[in-house]
View 1 (cartoon, rainbow, N blue to C red):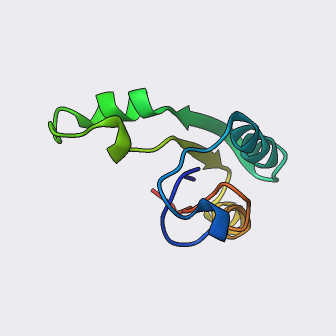
View 2: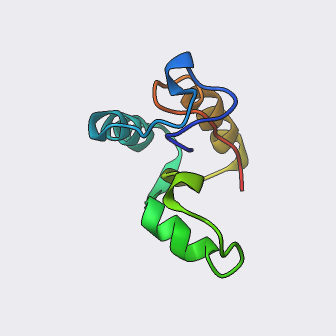
Amino acid sequence: MKPSHGAGGSDSCRGRERRTVSEKQAVFRHLLNSPGVEKIYFRSIEYTLGELRDTFTELTPDDVFESFRVKTRSAAEADHLISLATRLPGVSDAHRL
């Protein structure tokens, strides 16, 4: 789940502005309290850049976003969490990897 920009999510998420610490904490708390969640991973801008720079050498911090990766117990729980998460303020995109 990306706390950034893109399709879906609330109108306040559109654009390329960064999420505040309190917005990210609210999303994290929601994920943490959701049924079926086994693990939550936070991907910082720096981590994402490092992960992608070998393939995409021209990337800058403005090209990538912070995100949460969530491991759920089942695909049905993942689908349910995705439908809920896209309605949270600060979330613009949620999908299965």
